[in-house]
Image (tube, rainbow, N blue to C red):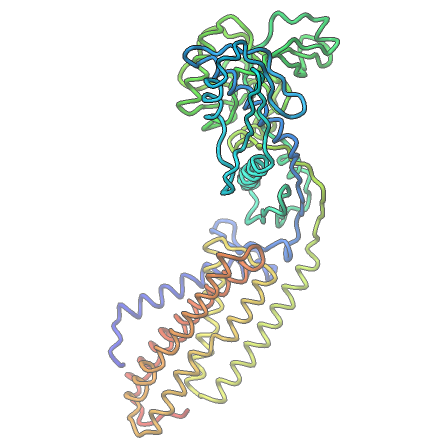
Length: 533
């Protein structure tokens, strides 16, 4: 017991002091004091229920998922029939009534067509049903999307949308947002500390769907003005700087390149005109497609389409190889920065609209923090009085450990950039209240050993040794419960679990390791013949 190496004491004090120092900026912030700007200031983030913020409920347009599936299947059918050996000739493809319909020029090739088209369909879930129902009757081919396939596509789109929303909010500089799915087509977004949700809505409202499509140079201006698109093309609004207002531009629906294969998007400036632009990079597969598109269409214009609007329609002067390009078009530094963030985070696979919006003020959170601080102070004071009256000097060590335990919890939470919510405050107060359990077990064990006639040093040594197993067993079970809450729960439940896990670790550290060090130093220094418990 008396053999407590100096290196171990230095290590214990270093860990304790480091956590306490990291906790100081948070203490200054809560106390209303100014922390020196020249020093690092890791602080605990406050959740929406404490700091206020913005609450948005977003809903996806599932009809858009249906339409996208039709377009992808149409493109797949055309490519599959053209690449078949021998080639399978087909007539015009119709997407009326939400299904793919076309005629085989040679009905005798129905089996070959079935074999080719079957590879475009996949299993939907574990039901054994396909995502598309294929029917061929007298040369007519009908591909109908199944409900199970649509459900699977919506689920995949929503999963991807959640990740894109998360990346965009992190790019805004906010901390610890709550982003969870609600039902099959809704996403709940809560961002603490963001009082004005306009920037958040602007960022999330942009699909950031980037497309490169060839321009139909044969489309007449009269047809475009009347909204008439030739078969295989579509009209896209274009704010042409050379003409007043917005003019429709005819582009080919299929055969273009989407921005799904972007790997990087950064804002910059044109070296000649110094105008803001966005530089983009494709992955290997996307770069090869872009090089092929530009190599086969030198001298033709192609449209850069963002969220269904043409932002630029330059001519392809030469093949663009290397997988890099740039997007320009009446940008400001702010809009180019925002576009780069949206493109880098990925395109939203489906449009999201705000169906519910709330701004939460910080007043209730301030009251909660104040109430929590009062509860913690009163509880801690009552515990200290009880321990001092019951265990004397051992109670003093327990009180000191309790104070350091509080500082260590704050320091670790600030160091890992954790978020404190209202349930987290409850977990904090609970942890403080339960932090003396280990000391009570140790002190009572020492008291029993003294009653059995053991000497002071032996009683203290046996007390710490014998109580340790019970302390660790009890805290391991609490830790398992807290970890399960963190893994399974969400939002406030996770906040409670984080504080509880940290509190369990720090309470064991302070109640067992620190108090044992203090006790060993006191026994070695004074060598008492008796102790009062």
